[in-house]
Amino acid sequence: QVQLVESGGGLVQAGGSLRLSCAASGRTFSSYAMGWFRQAPGKEREFISSISGGGGYVDYADSVKGRFTISRDNVKNTVYLQMNSLKPEDTAIYYCAARSSVGIPRRQDAYNYWGQGTQVTVSS
Image (cartoon, rainbow, N blue to C red; front, side, top):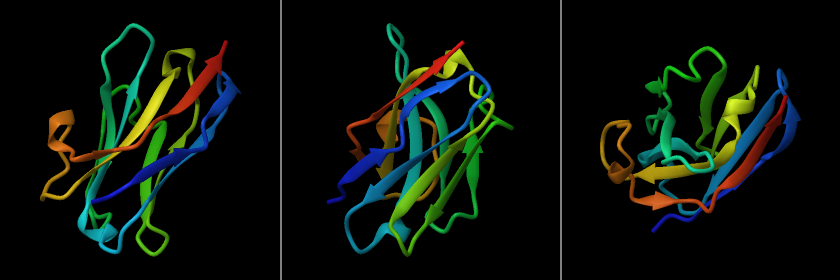
C-alpha cells in the first residue's frame, strides 16, 4: 500500500514557475514508477509526465515537453514536477500516481495509487 500526498500548488502569473512535490509512504518507493496527471475544469484528467523507479526513464506529454521536468529522490520518497513558463491553460488540479509494475505508461488505469491532488492556477 502506498499513500501519496501532493504539495506545492498555488497561484502564479503566466510565465512563472512552480515545483510540485509528491511524498510517498512506504519503504519500497524506488520500485514504483510515478506519474503526474492533471484535470482542468470541465475536462478529463490527462497524462503529464512519468518516471521510472530508478529515474532513468521519463516521458512527457507534448503540451508540457520543454517546460516541465519530472524528477525523483528515492531517499526522500518524493517525486517532483518542476513547471516553468506556465500558461493559463496549465490551470488544473495536479495529481501524482504510483504504479507497482514495470513501465511508465500514459494510461491512468495503469496506476494503482493516487494522491488527493493540488490546485495550480495560472493567471494571465
